[in-house]
Image (cartoon, rainbow, N blue to C red):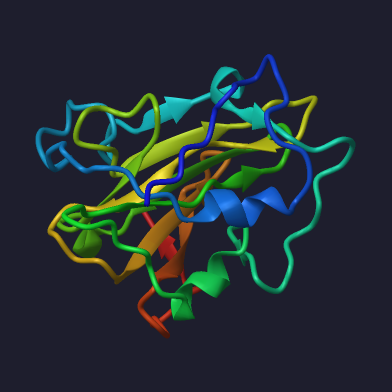
Amino acid sequence: MMVTVGLTMRRHRWWRGGAVFMMLLVFFVPSGVSDARGSSAIVGTPTHPQVLTCAEEATQFENTLPPAGPHDVAFGPGYFPQARRLATATPHIAPGRRGTYKLPPVVNPGATVNLTIAGGARSYVVQQNPWSPPGGSQSVTYKACADEPGFFPQSFRFTDGRLRGCVPINVRVNGQRTTRQIVLSLFSGRCRASSNPISS
């Protein structure tokens, strides 16, 4: 079964309340695009990140941004909602299809954060959003709206046919030189996590 969710960007509030997070959390679509590996000149690579701005952000919250909770995975100025629950969940696999796992980052108002798939994982997973290149992005910079809290529609897509895996992500906040790494478990149990700073 494929879940279809209508999407309205910045101009309209398309979802109200945290209850809908779980509906959006895991979203399977047919995967017919190629890998994002290639020249560093291609948008979406670590040296040329895809940039999403306030125009691509979806607003949802009435007043203030809810803080990260125990089931969220925080990354500095934001978090992936309910992401910890995915570690022990079971993905629904539509017959004959490989899926995409929708996990939208919530970014604090006015913040800029870059999320880059760590080197060892770039061969099997990409970030996918409505504006990404056909093969997905290895690196995306999110520039949140200054006046309204919201989230960026995006998914993680395995490119090698696997259904589960650990996704290490290097997080750089507001252009700082030092990054930190978080690790998402997509239906893969306990993943080795790292919070050590990584200089670049």
